[in-house]
Length: 65
Image (cartoon, rainbow, N blue to C red; front, top):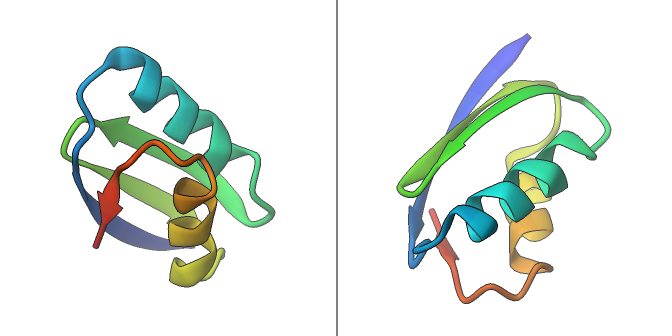
């Protein structure tokens, strides 16, 4: 199991954190995701671009790196 870290800019609310958490956990290959206002640590075999795309599809105005 691999761990990946994502960094966020623009996450301001708990609602946004919850939406990001749900989107990541729904992805094939994600075993766990710990999400906060400044980033996420994701365990599993999902590709990094898949994680980033899932967050961008939410259209929350969040920048992911």
